[in-house]
Every structure is written in C-alpha cells, then in structure tokens.
Amino acid sequence: MRGIVISAAIAAVCLPVWAADNKDNVNAQEIIQKFAAKEAEFRDARNNYTYRQSVKMEELDAGGNPTGGKWEEIDDIIFSPEGKRTEKVIYAPVVSLRNILLTPEDVQDLRNVQPFVLTTAEVGEYNVDYLGKEKVDEIGCYSFSVKPKKMVKGKRYFEGTIWVDDRDLQIVKTYGKGTGLVDSKTNQFPKFETYREQIDGKYWFPTYTHADDTLHFKDMNQRIRMTVKYQDYKRYEGKSTIHYGEVVDDKKDTAPPVKKK
Image (cartoon, rainbow, N blue to C red; front, side):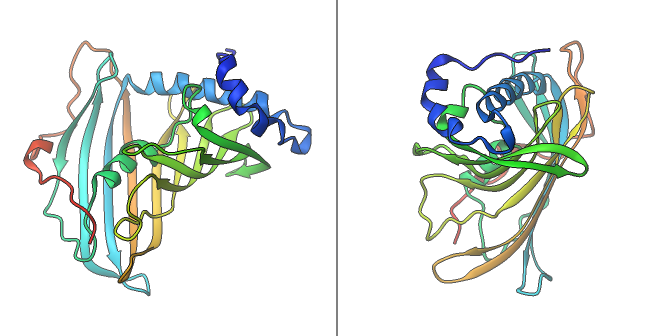
C-alpha cells in the first residue's frame, strides 16, 4: 500500500536538507517522505496494541561490574481504540540507585524517545541527512542522521542515527540519545540502541533497547547499563480487557521522579 505524501509545507521546510543528500543514486527526499508516512501509519496501528514493558537500570563501576544500585519496573501498557495509554505497574521494587536519580526527562525518554517514531507530522522538526546503504542483521537499510533543528523547553527529542528497511520503509533500528533544553551539569542521558521486529507481518515494533554508557556530571562520572524489553504485543479490539497478571502497584503510589544528583 502506498504511503501518504508529506504535506507541501513540511516538504518546503525540509527540502534543502533532503536535496543535498543524493548518495548511491538514492532519492533521499522520496524515501524520507515515504518512511515518515509509514511511521505515521505504524504509530496509529500501535495505538491499538497492548504490550508489556520491562526496564532495568544498574549502576556499574568503571570495569562494568554492578555496584548494587538499580531500578527495575514492569508495566502493562494498554492503548484504548482512541489512542489513550494506560499503564499498570506489575512489578516495582524499591529503587536502590545510589549516585543518580530519575528525572521527568528520563521517563519521557523511556516512553517516547527510546522507541523513536518519526512521522510526517514530526519530520519537519529535524534535520535528516542521508548517510548511505547498510545491512542490519541481513536486512537492507537506508541510514540517516537525525538531529532536532531547534528545541522547545519541556519537549524531548532524539539525536542520532536511524536505519530504515529498504523494502518496508520503516525504522528497524535507532542509535543515539535523548536531548532537550535541560541543565547539562545535573542531567545526563545515555546513548542507546533500539531494535524493532516485524510483529504482525506489516509493521515493525520496538522490542529491545540497550544502553551501556558513562554519564559525565560536573563532580562525578557514573557508568550505567539499561535494558528495556517490549513483549507480548496483542491487538486490542476494545471488546475485552487484556490482563497479563495481578497488579501489585500503581503509578499513583510511586514517588514522583526527581532531579539527578
């Protein structure tokens, strides 16, 4: 099925960036238009899927060994047919991080930046440069660098590289970090990789995110390792509620995120 053509207004804004990139005799402008439209389709489709999200973050020493500080959480993510998301916490032990603390920006990155989706409506906010052709796990891909043109306070953005399947024209891998207008002395964010898999034979869903990076603060450095798994995708038809397990906690009972040390 052919994707929705990008609007003329957005195309006019982004054309200088796209037109400048024409490696390998590839029409980068056309590819970006098409994959952004496919990403919009995917986002709408994902709004009708429930899934389980498991996250684990550990503080490490310089040699990569766990020091005992960690954060773990398992959530069931439910999307209504209208696209409203509900989260139910299934497992949430006490956070034992010692040298870093979670911030609202960390939560935004977990929800929206690490499973990055670049749609027609959002592509105009970024400089998108074509890098060339590559293979990711034997899948032929077009690779692009992505960087926000300007940033609005309170909003999080992705900065890094994306790989787009050359057949389905959907993002299959991202590598980069979350960015935004924050105090860099007290807020640092790790580089991460996110992989997608074709779940329903049509769309590529994020299934795995991994980060192993050193955060450089003003007075200290802290290496961290984080793994996020997105599992058990099920299409939600709105006829019944899907339960993965007994809820043992809820977002309203957890302490609000605070700034990093």
